[in-house]
Image (cartoon, rainbow, N blue to C red; front, side):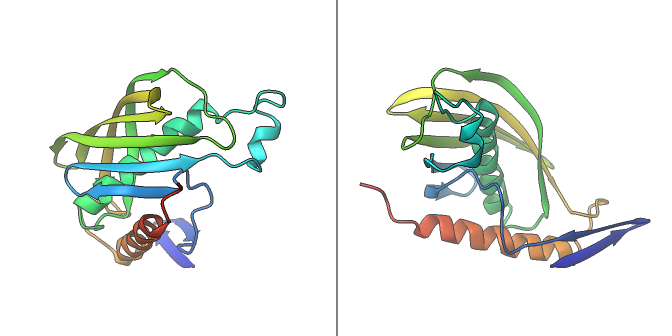
Length: 176
């Protein structure tokens, strides 16, 4: 656990897990260009009891989160895992076109459209069985945890965590 202080604020960060990882596997990573990943929806996902009991589907906001998480990992890899924070600034032209049910997979593809300083614009989509389920353009920003342009030890810890996460997700066997 890492304990950070900034002015009067103090918080703790656990870098050994990512509780709500929306990616099951990374199938392709080309830093500076694109990423492809898979989110396989299990039968036992806790929120499926409520969303919806008789027609369980992956909530749209979690489909969008899968797009963002893949985009953030691409931006981190492109930036050599330097910056501790990669944040979603805008989600534009988001369209939902299909459901993902338990046992099905959302195939995520994100590509960098433009990079400008601390901002990166990405085109992202998720498909199920070759048909678009979600798509949009995401604007993400990356910056040091403490701001002000200076990296701190927390940025290094975050970089190591996300590099290890990418390595783990790339080692997941391909489902047949």
